[in-house]
Length: 266
Image 1 (tube, rainbow, N blue to C red):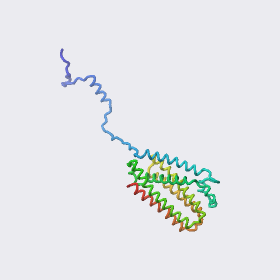
Image 2: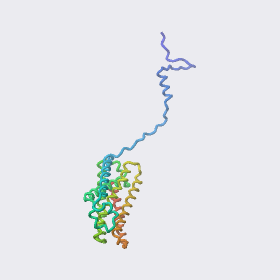
Image 3: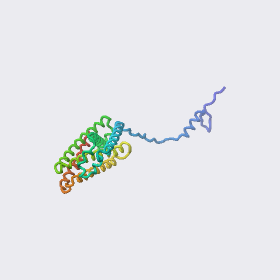
Image 4: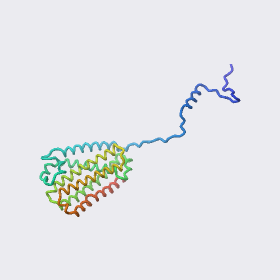
């Protein structure tokens, strides 16, 4: 029996035989789209290594902030500690009974230090290299910034206290200390807003810096208002007010931005 030819002559040419499988393969190739160009793969940046630990610390800071606020609105004597921020000078005799415990100020100041240090580390211009840090490297950067922030706080407080003790009446100082520390802790806790926005929203760094700057300005304006309210006689000495603004407001802020930038970029 003659074998089947591998092809047949058609018009002087040879057409090869196509098996059933070959025909199906050609049909699939003709039906499948042909990609003449290829797009580059899109890579999604992974979260920094320290993200989980940072979120855990942020949750703890929120819980501490809630507890501190509860201490401020808790009735004490004939008032609440939060009311000291609006108390007139005649309320000076009641300051002692309205003050929170020493633990409130210790925990509040430590929490404030950590909050400010975290925000400065994450938002400071020129700190873009932070995202590539390891967990240990990130928290070491936060620790370095915290040292500078603590030093700035001590210097600013000493200068401010020196001015208060020099130019003000002793009986007014207790109310000033209460307002100064409570307002500082309250203002620091408002920085939870930009911190949480940084962690959980795509808001730009420049927008978050603006939000933080506005909160800082509001805090300093309120502090100046309270000091003028408590020490009303200072309104007659504009030179003292100018000295205060330069020594306790403008200078420390510029100093903080400079040294924090150096610490983050080390």
